[in-house]
Each structure stands twice: as C-alpha cells, then as structure tokens.
Image (tube, rainbow, N blue to C red; front, top):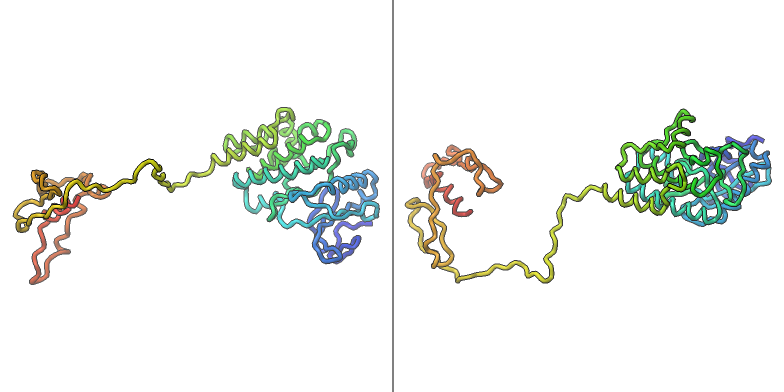
Length: 381
C-alpha cells in the first residue's frame, strides 16, 4: 500500500505523524509523536522496498547495528517494525538543520567551526565503527548541526563491517562526490571509505561547495577518482591537510586524529592577531622604577620682571646654577618643519595665537606678546 506522503494525524505502528521531514533512497522521514506525546523521527520504508526481502534485510541490520551505538553524535534508534507491510524505524528527533541547509543559509563555516565539526564527527564515527557499523553515506545532508553539536543521521545503507555487501555486483549505492574512489572502482566498503566521506563533508563545510562539483555526474565521479577536490580559497596548510585526507589511495590518507590536529593548528595560524598589546609584567627579580632625589629641594629665586630677559630653566640643585638659559625664538626664525619637541610633531605655526581672537577688552591688562608664549612653552618642555 502506498504510504509515502502520509498526511499529518495518520497513525503508523502506534505513532502519530505530525509533519514530513525529508525523503531518501530508503524512504520518507516524518516528525511524529509516541503514545506519551514525546517527539520522534519515524522513517517509513518505501513500498517497493518493503516488498523486497533484500531491502528488509538491510533495514533489519541497520536497526540491529545502530542499537549498539550510544553516542551524543549519533541519532539513537528507539524502535522498529521490520516484518510489517509498513516497515519503519523510529529514532530520537534531533533539533537542528542539516549541514547542507546550514551552509546554504549561513555560508561556509569559519575555520574554527570546521575544526570543531571535524572533531565531533570523528568522535561519532569512531563509535559507529567500534560497534561494527559502516555508515557508507556520509554527506552534508546526513549531518545535523544541532545545539548539542554535530549528529550523524540516516544510516539508510549502513551495514555491519563483517557482513557481505548488500548491493549487486557492479552496483554502487551512495552519493556522487562523497563516495570514495575505491568504492567507485568496485571495492568493498571499509572504515577508510567512511573517513574519505568525512573529509569530503569537511571540505564542503569549509568552502560551501561540493568538493568534486555537482554535475554532470560522470565529471563528478572522474574528479573523485583522480583525487582533484575543489579547495580554492582555503589557506594553503588547511587545504593541504584536506587533500591528504582525500587521497585516492587509502594507504596514503592522513589518519583522522592527525587530520583534526593539523586542521586545528592551521586554523589557529589563521586567527587575526589582537591589536591590543599587553605589557609584560615586571619580573620578580627586577625592582620597579622609583624616583630618586639626589638633593634637597631648592627654593626658587625671585624672577625678574616679565619680559626683561628670556625665560630660563631653573636648576633643582643650586650647584647647577651655571645651567644654560634657553634662548628666545623669534617669529622670523620659525619655519614650516615640525618641532620634534612639540606634542605629536605639530608645526609651531599651529600654536600661534590669533591676535584678533585674543584682543584685550577696554581696561583689561594687555595680552602677553606672542614671543613670551612660545618661550613659556619651551620652558615647560
């Protein structure tokens, strides 16, 4: 019976369908709720696959093997009905968008986020492999970006590592551009093939583009076989690490833990330096700077009446009474060159007074001559 396109409110195996979530090669996925009202994801097998004993066997193995996995980075299998005419699998409902949708909305991930994604998926895929399961369909659409981190979903073609291939001889099941070169050449599924797909997903996250293009399909497959990923725009070291992880020969691929380490180092190298400089603290064996007084404070002598002689710099120690006086600088001696002794190298002319602006009011004391002001500034410097 045709059940794809199930209307909201429909009951299937004790679960009430709420809304469609998506569809894939194995069937359609719906948001549903169990008898207690808890939200779940219900994957309903396509009718033509439900009548196929091989498809049912595949689904049975999927459930069996995924029930072994308990990891925050893998959607947990909660229930399944394999023998019914309406075969389905129920998993926990993980909130969040898949990586493909996330990149469409937000663009390529910043490098530190790609590194975090790489590490989270590495941990999840390691757990999957430890349970004897191969995902075999690692794509941006099968990775959720959720509040709890990256989560692997849709093991629609997952199989146990010790089981024979489900597909017919010469037939490849998977997504072009995310299938490893050895699978394209008819090789057996392996953990190495999953890690290749993992690296392809990271390349997509970093560039926002399918790593081997989208179409035509034969061109995508040819680039994957030749080991020619599109990594344009990525920092040299970051791109080199991904390229090694996507090597055609599995023996030449960089080990996943090392991939994460090198991507981390590369992303750290690309972080902009903080413009704020933090001053180093004074070492413990160096005494802080102190003011040393070499002589008692001297009483300043009375100054002569204003303008009778040039302003002088008075000595602190009376023994230095022979200090040279500062010579007056007359207006005709000024030039256009900045005075290195003035703040910020401002030209002396910028410090001239506007005589009109400071014209004395009737009865007020006359303003000091301009020369005296310059000399006073010199005395302060």
